Image 1 (tube, rainbow, N blue to C red):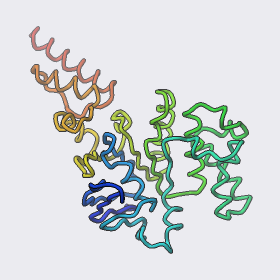
Image 2 (tube, one colour):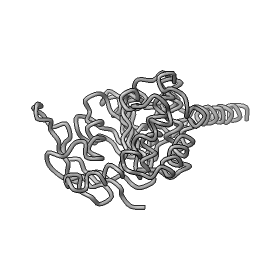
Image 3 (tube, rainbow, N blue to C red):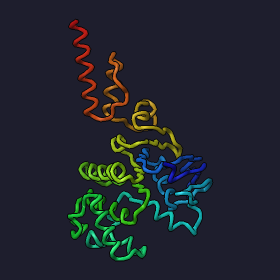
Image 4 (cartoon, rainbow, N blue to C red):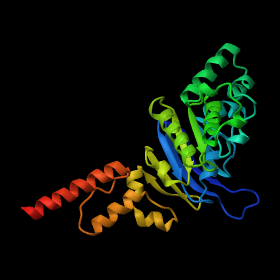
Length: 285
């Protein structure tokens, strides 16, 4: 479908830093894809995210969004209409006392006509399953609900790409599950391009593509199954792998022959059960 974001040999260093935070990054994000970016604190993943809509500009190299260079000041508003950002703390993005007013804030500032704003707000809240809370006070919502309202506020701007920079970092497990489910649905059912920045490996399992950042460089890039199959390399980066991957590795070390791309608990359990039955049948024959 073509790339919506392209990094061309991007290097970035904060003025007060003595080292590069991003080092010669070359990367394309395809339209309609769900890309997860995984890495430990300080790996450069959030800095990468902030380059996707011009919050940060490269020290060297170029970033293009829908063909527009982020360094072009005359096109920065267009770029930020194309790429919406959601950050860690939803309280920092919620500006109104009523949910629907908060979601309407960005379109109002863009000069969108009132009737269209009403439709955008309703559509965005329905997309994140928060329509029934449209007249609630945001401060009375749970953390997961607040983050979904923050996502709705970005969706109301009708971006082509939504970048979520560790959106579950401040949430409990229930809130995390709500937000990740919403993100997956936006991509799978609505065709939105999604980039999810995270340090939780379990949030990456259903992505189309997993990029692992380490010390400002891309350490791994492929499908989640491909990346997580390299257990030692992940451990060397100080990152974990899904428990299913560890179980499969240990069983294969004991003589089983199980696929190494089993990331979900159910499919792992089914594969193990089938393997055990085959072994039992072989012993009995």
